[in-house]
Length: 456
View: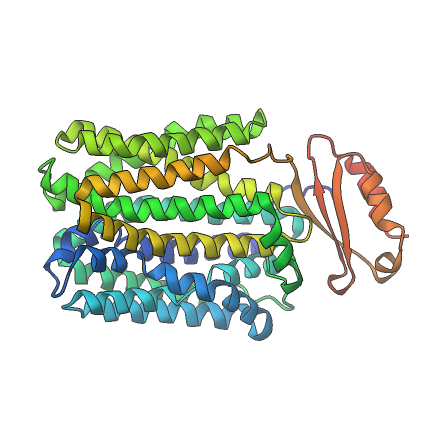
């Protein structure tokens, strides 16, 4: 139970290489977001609804295939699934790059979304890291996703300005190929895939995850957040170009400034949420920002300085929620159910992205930019109304303890674990030869826990 001072070289290599694989894929996925609304209008057959569909439709195949791909990786191995997913993503980028119609772009984006590798990557992280270092590895992946999103928002307009929309899609394919090379040559191969309920999906945990009111609120929240993101980025690039009169080739500096400022703006709130145990207050505050910022987009879109300021405020709220919601999930998910809860959460996220693209396109086609902003504001408001009913989460973290055969058979072990100060939940899973705990790190008596699970 004692914390290791640092990762082993193998663990560090695994964490860094998998973080890069995730980053390259997310970079390719989001690079299209700030440019498709403006550059996509030149494609044959383009309508607002179809452009919105092109922006968000990757989420549809992601949502359907995320959990099945994770389960498939349990059967045939992590690396084959990850390589196949990256290949699909690369082929989707090539298909979209060759497109001269919006329908071909949609087909390419759907194929890109079919490369749903997130669950398999997370399971591989669990296979390749020790329990005490797994949180660090997951944090590295989380940072890589945030960095990739920020870089994508800047790189997309720059590459589109130099090489057009087809250049952006070819870049996404090239990034997927780099990811495949990393998986083949840099990511270690685990000797034995680990049965790990905190990183993988378990069928038996599905119904409890779908019946848990706190998890359902969270799933609605992440779906709403990504729906708002997709819909907003149908309207914001067009508002910058048509109303604030900023050429689309120059949009990159707006996103760069907004993301840098918003990053520093959100950090104090994240620290406050965790240290002061005020997660509910911070999450509701960030949702309130999303509610209020949408009418501000509408009111400020004729002024470039005010538009930039509003984009900064939007990204403070968005990035704060993107960072805190996974932490909230890890606190709420029952012991041994975190992997399944995360699978449902990710599915909800991608389904929300698909819905947001279509919703934003439809609202823009029928009601103009104002309609998109009002629609996003109402969606954020519905989230706030649901979020108000959430409970303050328990401030606990997940642990997995490997057990010997004798310990698995010990009927009283669960009760002894629950008697340790700071242990809130404990379940013994015989087929995993492990105990899954939820512990309050401030209250946990580590020495007492070590004594309970020490080999006899």
